[in-house]
Amino acid sequence: MSEHKPYSFFQSVERSFDKAAKFTNWEKGLLEQIKACNSIYSMRFPVKMDDGRIEVIEAYRVQHSQHKSPCKGGIRFSEEVNQDEVMALASLMTYKCAIVNVPFGGGKGGIKINPRSHSTYELEKITRRYTAELVKKNFIGPGIDVPAPDYGTGEREMAWIVDTYASLKPGEIDAAGCVTGKPVTQGGVRGRKEATGLGVFFGIREVCNMPDVMQKLGLTVGVVGKTVVVQGLGNVGYHSAKFFREAGSKVVAIAEYEGAIFNAAGLNEEEVFQHRKKTGSILNFPGATNLAKSTDALELECDILIPAALENVINGENAPRVKAKIIGEAANGPLTPEADEIFSAKGILVVPDMYLNAGGVTVSYFEWLKNLSHVRYGRMEKRFTENMNNHILGQIEELTGKKVTDSERTFILHGPEEVDLVHSGLEETMITATREIMEIWKNNPDIPDMRTAAYVCAINKVGTSYAELGIFP
Ligand code: NAD
Image (cartoon, rainbow, N blue to C red):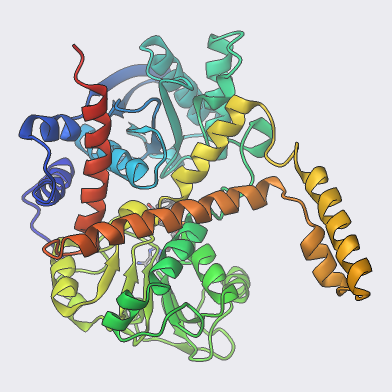
C-alpha cells in the first residue's frame, strides 16, 4: 500500500509526543527541552576497501537526552540510515528507557552501508573507525554513551567496539561497559537472546491478569487457553510464541514472508522452526492448514495478535478486518496511525511497542551493571542459597516425616544462575511498567489509547528528572 507521508520520522515522533503532552502539566519550555535532541554527531570518514579503493563512510550518533547518564541505544548498519531516522530512534529510546525505569538517556547510532555488500574485514575496519571517531569526540564510554546492536549489527560488531574502545583507553577499568550486546565471553550477559520475546510475554500476561481490562474486552483473566497469532518467526516472534505456549496459550497461527499456517489445536514454534529449516518454508507443516496469503493470518479470529516482523504491516486498509482483541506490538511500528485510530474506535487494545519490546534494553542495562560490578550474576549467592534451601527442606522433611519428589527437590534447592536473575529482573520490569501505564490511563479517561498513556508516563518521568535537577545554570 502506498502511503502519503507528510511528516518525517522524527516529526511524527514529535507529533505523538505533543498529543500526549496535552495530558501533562509541564510548562512549554520544559516540554521543548524533553523533545529536543541534545547532541548530534554527523561524521564522514575514509575506509580503504579490500580492492584498494577509498570509500567515504557516512555515519551518525545522536544523544537525544542527557537527563540521565549514560545515553543508550543501538547502532544500525543500513543503506536507509539518515540523520532524521537516527534522531527519531534516539528520542524513542529516551521514552522507552524512562517507561521501564532504566536510568539512561536515549541515544542511537547509524552507519549508512549495506552490510551484505562488504567483506567481514571491511565491516571490522568500518566499525573500529566509527568507534575511534566516537572516542575522539567523547561520544562513547560507560558513563557517557553506551551503544548496542540494532538492524545489521550483532555480537560480533559489539566485540569489535569494546576491543577498540579498550585499546584507546588503556587502564579504564570499566571499559567493558562501553557497549552492550557483547558475546558472553567478552562481558555479555546470559538471557539477552530471548529477552525481547520474553518481555513481550510478561507485558501481555500482566495485561491479561487485569480483571477490569479483560472484562472490557470480553475475555477471561489470564493467558491460559488464549489463542495467539504470531507474525514473524525470527528472534522476537519465535521467543514470544515459545513463552505463550509454555504458559498454556494456544499459538494457532504463525506467519512468515513465504506464507502462514493455522492449527486450531496449537502449533509448537520449535517444530515449525525445524520444519522451515528442513524444507525452506513454514508451509505444509504436518497437521496445519496453509493460508492463502501470509497476511491472512493477521485477520484470523484470535485473542492476541503479535506482529513481530516489520513496520506498517497493519494499516488503514487491513485494520478493519482484524479480529484480535489484543494486539501486542512486538515489532517496532507495526501499526500505522490509521490502524491505531480504527482499533481505538473498535475497542481493540493495542499494547504499544515503545515499552512492550523494551526487553532488549532492559537486559542491556543488566549487562552494563554486570560490567561495572565485574562479577557474574549469581556467583556470590548461588551456593549459599542452595545450601540454605537444602537445610530448610531437610528440616521440613524431618519434622513432617514426609519426602518431596525428586523433581520438586531439584526445583526447591536450585540457587539462581545468571539467566534466572536476568529473567526475574525482566519480569519485575515489565510488570511494573505495565501497571504504571495502565494506572495513568485509568486516572485519565480522556487519554485515547495505551500508546498515549505510555508517552504520558515517559514525559512525566523525564520531566520530573529535569524539574528536580533544575536547569543549569
Ligand atoms: P528477525 O530478523 O530475527 O525476525 C523477523 C522475522 O520476520 C524473520 O523471520 C522474517 O523472515 C520475518 N518476516 C519478514 N517479512 C515478513 C512478512 N512480510 N510477513 C511475515 N514475516 C516476515 O528480527 P527480530 O530481531 O525478531 O525483530 C523483529 C521486530 O522486532 C523488528 O521490528 C525489530 O525492530 C523489533 N525489535 C527487536 C528487538 C530484538 O531484541 N531483536 C528489540 C526490540 C524490537
